[in-house]
Image 1 (cartoon, rainbow, N blue to C red):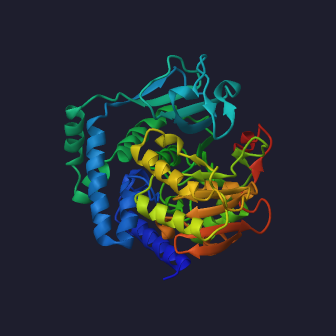
Image 2 (cartoon, rainbow, N blue to C red; image 1 turned 90 degrees about the vertical axis):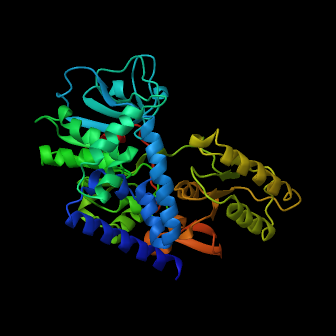
Length: 437
C-alpha cells in the first residue's frame, strides 16, 4: 500500500473508532485514549500503532499504562492558583506556562501569541503550569492550574484507582487512569468558576489535547453563545490524527495557510465555515531566524539504527558536505541520554562528508515535526527522515501544495509551488487581536 492510501486508511479507522465510542456515550472529549497524537505516550498513540501492528500496539499500550501509573504515583492534587474576582472578563486565553514564562512583576509572556498578559488586562489568562515551581507573583488577570507533585504519593494513586474502579467497564477504567485524563477531568469540573454571562470568547493554541476539548465542552454546555476558537500554532505533522474533529472541538479553528485548511476540510472532519485563515502569530517574518545547515531531532524516537541507517544512505548518495552542520536537539530533551547518544553517533557520520561539495541552505529533519514545513517556507532545502512514514511523512494527497521527491521509503525531499501556501508568517505584533475578532 502506498503512503497516501495507508494514511487515508488510518484516518478512516480512527474516525470510525471515535464515532463508535461517541455512539456508546463514551466521553471522547476528556480522555487520553482519544488524543491521537502520532508521537508521545498517550493511549491514543497506542491505538494508532495497534492499527498498524496489533502485537506492537499491545506492547506499547502496556508500556503507556505502566508509565501512567508511575506518573500518577508522583502526582499530588491539582489546585487553582488565582486572584479573586475572575468572572468579569469577556475573553479567556488558555495556554501552557512554566515559571520562566513570568517576569518579576508576575506578567506572563505568551510565546504563541507573542504578547504579555499585563498588556491585555481585559483578558483572563487560564494557564496550565507544566513544571514544579509556582511563580512567587502572578498578575491579577491570571489563573494557574498547578499540581502539588510529591516524591511518592501512594495515597493519591490508590484514591485515583478507587475512583476509577467505580467505572462500569474496564474500558472506562483504563481511560481514567492517565495524567491527560485526570488533568482534563479536574479542569472540566472547575472551569465553570471562570465563566459568566459576560464571557464572549475562549481562545487557545489547539492540539486536540483532552483538557482543551474538556474546556470547550464545558463552555458549550454552560453557554452556547460563547465563541470557542482554537488556532494551529505550528504546521501540523504529516498525519495529524490529533486534529480529527471530535466532541469538544472548538466552533472555529484558525490556520495559517490554504494547505492546512485543505487538509482539515477534506480529511479531518472540519467544515469550511469553521475554518479561518490568518497569518501565524507564533511563526513570524524575521531575518534573525536561521534554519539552514542544521539537523533537527524530534522530541521522541524509537530506533537509532533506522535513523542512522537512513542518514548514512542519504550521505552516501549525495555530494553534500555536512561536516559543519549543527545538530539541534529538541528543547525538551537537552538532558536525554537517548538523544545525546544519537547526537554523538550522527557527528561521526557527518565527519566523513568533509571532502564533498558544499551546499548551503539545506537542513535535515528527523521524525514527526512540522518544522520541516516552516524551513521550506523560509527557503531552506529540506530533507525529511522518517521512522514511521505513514505517521510522519507529508503527502501531496493530504496537503496538496507540497512537491515531494521520494529518495527512499523513509526519506523525502520537499519543495513548494508558491510562497505562503504552507505558512503565512505573521508581521504585525498585534496580530493576535484578529484571532479574537
